[in-house]
Image (cartoon, rainbow, N blue to C red; front, side, top):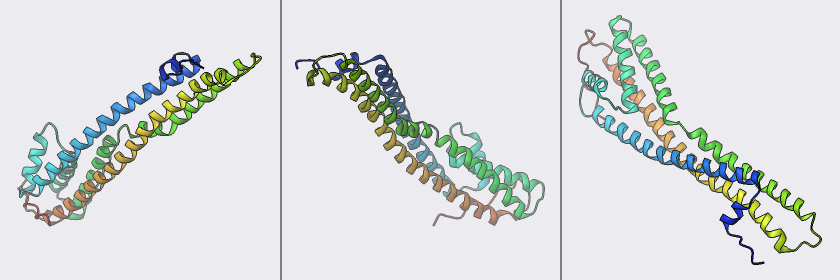
Length: 236
């Protein structure tokens, strides 16, 4: 009964299949944690950039100035890139002397396409976290079942079976399930949190698209292509 049942000893004396499962789950956990930290800082940066551009958008600058500054920036906000795509399409259709509904429809389609591209980038790695959260417990359970099966096969050759002979094999098998849960729980929590934050960002971008279209609708009667647009209405 004086056997060393520490976690490290159980892992070192586990069967090869169980060790492979444990190492794989630990590697997946490390990767998922790196993605979690990267996504935390990435979403924080996206929110800061969007809020900065939104303040600039409603500060009183006209649309032409905003369009020029959007093209000059190296690192721009997703909201700013959506604005730039809509503005480019709007000006292009104005140069062709199309009617107002065609100009607005073209700007809307350009911004919706840009919105989808931006959302795809923001949602990057969420699928991996979802897979880790759903699959890791089952992989750990597979390691546990394999370890227990191997332990009982070994016990079949013994004349007398006691708790001391059963405990190590079962304990080392259960470690695989514990590691699977260790990998899955943070991934599930992070996925749910990121999904909520991305939904809020998506709502913010869709609201901006509708507000910008309302501004364009008031400016479709500008006299000449390339002329400075009137300043957007103040945010209420």
